[in-house]
Image (cartoon, rainbow, N blue to C red):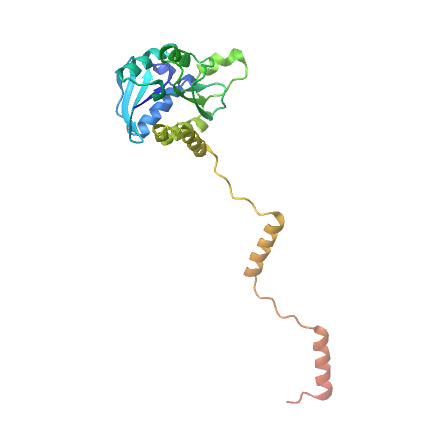
Length: 239
């Protein structure tokens, strides 16, 4: 069984915060893959379903970000799961907007939700880090993280959530590299057909023009015609 944990803060006023992109990601997975309705358990909201033929549970801790580990720990113990059965989705300042990276273990890198989960189940769980970008100045970090996604952010956020949802079944196969690659492929801009070089393009235009043009009149030698006419007058046009 997989435990898919989305990190965020509960309540309508936090719903569109960059810090809540983990909630958004697991909601997208549940909606796209036929998970059941949300119900309250383990100090959080849970949804039952399956990914790639394997049973899965979505968990959105309602304990606020800094206490996420309490909710995750309860679910882990109830189902007798290991940390390697847990995949946590959360926001990452050090990744550009629209980028996704997956890893197992490691430090919290200043993320209070990850730090809390570390303290309750250890750090051996898998992490899906969703880039929200850095505002460029340390003094602006709090406002950036706890601010709503902008209208311009929707250009990358909606495709990102859709890609995560559609490729999530790879997570059930523990094929994390393939999941990450598949998401990146979904988000890659479509390649435009290469333009012909200047010389080739001119040749193609000339060829099309030649094909559509009416047949050219046969060339005549004006000098030869004049000589023939004069000869006929001199000798007479005998048939």
